[in-house]
Amino acid sequence: MAAPLLEVKHLKKYFNTPKGMLHAVDDVSFSIEKGRTMGVVGESGCGKSTLGRTIIHLQDSTDGQIFFEGKDITRVKKKELHRINEEMQIVFQDPFSSLNPRMTVEEVIAEPLEISHRFKRGEIQDETERIMELVGIDERLRHSYPHELDGGRRQRVGIGRALALNPKFIVCDEPVSALDVSIQAQVLNLLQDLQEKSGITYMFVTHDLSVVKHISNNICVMYLGQLVETASSGELFAHPMHPYTKALLSAIPSIDIHHPKKRIVLQGEIVSPIEPKPGCRFAARCPHATEACHEPQELKEISAGHFVSCCRVE
Ligand SMILES: Nc1ncnc2c1ncn2[C@@H]1O[C@H](COP(=O)(O)OP(=O)(O)OP(=O)(O)O)[C@@H](O)[C@H]1O
Ligand SMILES: [Mg+2]
View 1 (cartoon, protein in one colour):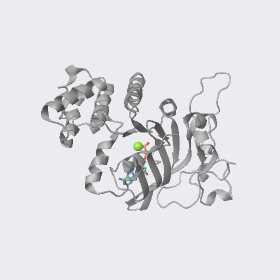
View 2: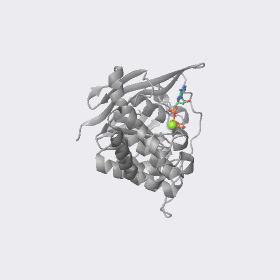
View 3: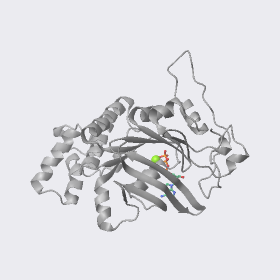
View 4: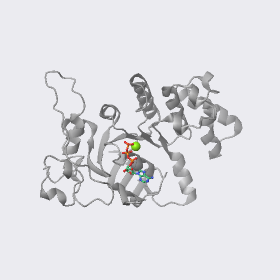
């Protein structure tokens, strides 16, 4: 087994809100091997983006540790943070709002190169051309502005910008959710090609389960700030254990007309992420919940590499 590029231990990110402390990410631990893709799934508001943003230091963590190439980067000095910012990047869902509308394609991609002070003037031009070719943007679009491009090309520019300084790790936060289905496949293929070429490691956040199955080696399922299940992609889809994962997977339409799947419709209330009580946060919606579910739960290894946080699963 390869050494993990990223290891997250008991990571917490709380937000102070007028109603109390909001537990957006609450004691999450997992690791990603170099050159692999970890999919992160769960419903809106479960903390997927907060997890990604906290890992790459777009915001400070509340508690826990983040190890990058074996080194704890949770509390680092400014100089070190500068290096981390170059090695860990993010691609956002909506390239339209993440790209500066007043900058051309060429300027958007060249900007991180200029800021890094790693390149001379002439080199920046060459590097920009290399990156545009790498992400499949035609040379004649170099002077275009983001609004002049279609969604797919815009996202290619976003990916190009993230790739500019050869990062080792990229958080892809719903990178294809805003794109037409036909374009989605092209952008996913681009991300996979780049991984094959350069061994880049991804954390791929999405609520689209068919996308995550296609692209991930391993998957983390989150529910209200917590990791409820993690396994290899094949294992998770073949043997989902947590009642929440089962409900999520049941929502994917079956292609087998002889064995249509029964969709599990969840009843009950979603608990608030603000100062939640100890115990399983899914219990209020879980068809199998008992008294024991109101005790704190722990992530247990059910089979090799398959972890579940549910006292009802044996
Ligand atoms: N800056 C902030 N201040 C206060 N609360 C926040 C902040 N950012 C996120 N939250 C809250 O943290 C929780 C997790 O939000 P997050 O955006 O990480 O969810 P998500 O899983 O990415 O959802 P989506 O699928 O809709 O993108 C939510 O309850 C959200 O309201
Ligand atoms: Mg999000």
